[in-house]
Image (cartoon, rainbow, N blue to C red; front, side, top):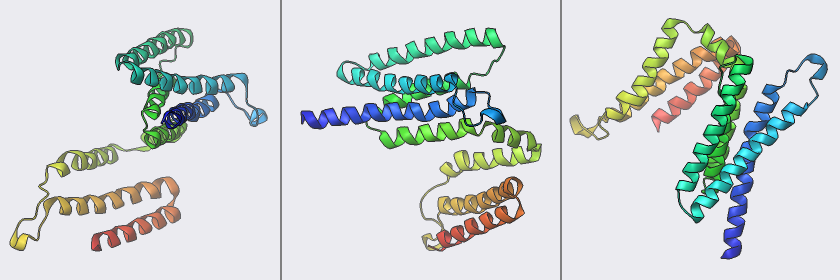
Length: 231
């Protein structure tokens, strides 16, 4: 039993280190100023960023293990301590560079928390969240370009779709009603969302990927939706 616990704890720490490194790789590359002549180089700042995030993930794992051995207040204290250090670093950096962006600090805190999450046995959730975080951080330019290209009408349509999915749909009764109990309002709502979502994704796919790829993607999603609705 002790060997099993030791292996589980070691696995948790290794995954905690890994989730920190996943985020650190993206932040490290993002922090360096690459030009065409240095595209293959990895400078000291990049390596430092990777190491720092890896250590933050590992620190989150260690603090989580200490919390499991004693009390949950250890983890809360660790989160507060890391947050305080990050805030001090942010204030110093903002004064020195006049850059008010806090993306790196938020990513660092998230690396710490995901490291703790891994030690609690939520391996898949921690790794998935780290990968999604790295993808979002790496897609900064594309996200900004998309936001700049959105019209007010497109933004309103996006918000309305979110309201339907997150607010209205959960309020629909999930039980048969009507003649012969043949109508389930929530199922019908899901079908409406599915159809609207395909049109929504298809519209932006055409805008971002071009007519050919966008229309092919829309057709594939439409076929999948049709088979899902039939079953």
